[in-house]
Length: 204
Ligand code: SF4
Image (tube, rainbow, N blue to C red):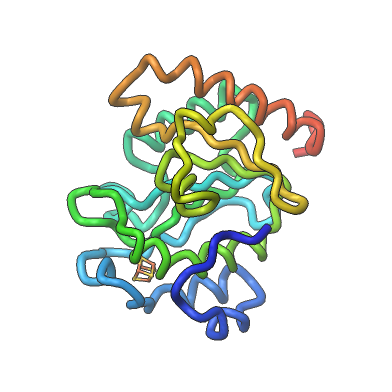
């Protein structure tokens, strides 16, 4: 799958052949202003051979403090949604559009997202998941179409090459507006069904 192009040349990123090599390169990244306020670069985590990847917006306070993605309240809700779909977190891979925390949890700017996108693109190519869940508006706009509305696009598969992507609301949006939970559960049922076609129960 080809994500929208970022501002950073990929030439520096063509070397890493494993996620660990990529992580080592990313740890020193200062390609955008978010580097100044971070505690950790939140690389992402999960199964390096995951058949399902989830992509969110960026680290929050807890993620920045621990250097892990989706470990705050929104992450705990995401864990519950995955569990309800019969999918365990160690099976999947979770990452964000930007790897450093935007101050005050603001939305990353287009420039920050564009600077970070080559890292995600390389991460995606190393994992090569056939299924992706796009968590929220920021990920949708930066990965697919800057004009896209998450409300209009959620719940429908987007096909890019060999990859199917399902946009849905970010779990943080569910914490602000629980009425969105019903839509997200519908979306995750579609994801669950597609995932089980690829990874039958008991073959995780
Ligand atoms: S957000 Fe991404 S591009 Fe910006 S400094 Fe962090 S790792 Fe580098």
